[in-house]
Length: 422
Ligand code: PMP
Image (cartoon, rainbow, N blue to C red; front, top):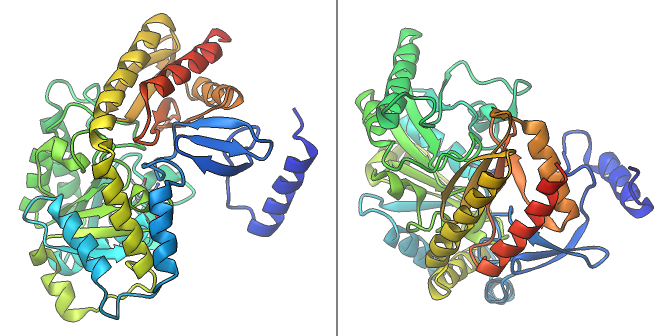
């Protein structure tokens, strides 16, 4: 169906002004102008329940965070080459949420930059260049990080120093996922070595979001982390998606796996909409890089970013958002499992807190086209989600952590409407 005139004009202007590399969500693109809590509003004033955008983890346009941002922007808004306490407070508070082995935090503006910096540091620390990632991982947009982001597709080739392993999906490994995953990592290490490439990094998103959301079993990373370390490499936990309480099991996804990373990258929800990201690391990892290189990022960790980051931590604590993610998320997963029993199109539900994935199937086989119809159907019903996984067949549901049981009921009612249509 043709777009309304106003929207068609925006699409045309967008193509002309932004060029050909951008992609819009939805067959019928959304023109959003306002956000509040779990709701987004389009130009016509229609409300949409946001169950997808995990940047606004504290809720869209949270007044306390907006106030902190505005106050600091009106006071002092410059970078980290002057003394300023707020960025130090933020680093100290972040470290306080992590295992004692983590000693420093370095600030960036995006998750991509954090992973790019992690790679530079790992190369210096290990003397290697090899990178191991999961099959459909996404870690970011810089030249070096896009080279190890297979979810960008065949148009963005992996680097010759990159090897992929399956995500720890129990269905892929008969029996022991932890051992199966570690064996795959070891095979990748051996292959790098055979090609004369010294392994530097194993990096995983600790809930395997773009691989299809593999929340369980917990504890699967230990043997693989041991394998990369034994090969002289470093383990990086990419917490850009699961971090900041979304899994309902503390602040960080890696803690569900009982391991301590060498570096931790984070971003998205860290600024609740303000561009704020970081890399935390063990001091010994950066010893070599710190001697020979300097690091400065004009906007990373600027005073406004620091004020925002502190306000986000305040809101997560004061509003009990991790606890809410745990309890509301558990109810949400139960609701989705009930629906999956009633509707053949829905398969396995995988979830940790308010990070949920649902397989969409036809006759037991992954069906990305059907998932796409559900995503677009929900948009028409006023609910925003997306799909992920190598075949685009996994519904990806990540609402703000302020989500309520009423919001879950609303979601379920709308999803049923769409499911009934087939
Ligand atoms: N890592 C993961 C797991 C991500 O999902 C993303 C963003 N989708 C990134 C890194 C890159 O973050 P950014 O878009 O802020 O550069």
